[in-house]
Image (cartoon, rainbow, N blue to C red; front, side, top):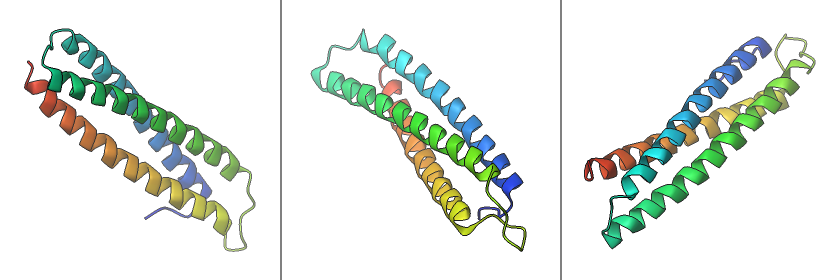
Length: 126
């Protein structure tokens, strides 16, 4: 469940951005690992898999960047929104935050699945 105070929104956004930075570093490392291993692969089917992972890494690095940027914009925007009389942020800010939370969870799931698949692929060549 997403929190309902601006300070909590900001903390949560910072946590997400830090986690996405870490994911970006990990995917960059895996992309380099793939490049190193692909130099020794000659099997045509395996090379097709290499291309698949190269494409997926590029796509996911873009997705990470885009979500980090959206979170940063949201976090900055949220800080300047007036509170309601109950002391909570406006509903549109809370809705945007919930949407970003869902996008973050979805992306983490896709990234985790891709990492698992890639590790399985890599172990067959090490």
